[in-house]
Image (tube, rainbow, N blue to C red; front, side, top):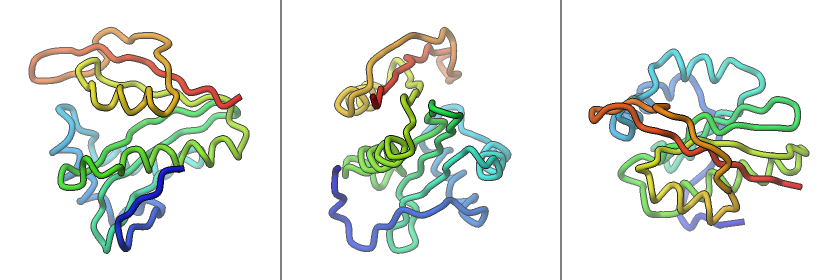
Length: 155
């Protein structure tokens, strides 16, 4: 399990009062950011785990995972631009995978933009493998972009 060598970092549940910060991180990070309603709905669904990495009151990143029976999906994982390249994405995903394995989830799925090579590399390092593609899954200023569907088997 990767350790995070950042003082005062703690993983905690996402709260509605985090919403303005989450929206700002989304706007800086994603060409088609989630609206506030997506965050609110995600926090309300009992099968979702919505967590932020809080560093001295600053949200450095977040992960939202939905679990149904023995499968889970990463709905969103984002690291704030100021906190990138410090192992936060790896930490968030590794923590989530450890919990899912303990809960006997058999596989974890995610989608990643075909252009997002750093994220693809991270996911491969964590044991994810490509299992499919979704044509025109993402929107961007340059037009639609395909998603690579990846899966991590826990068994």
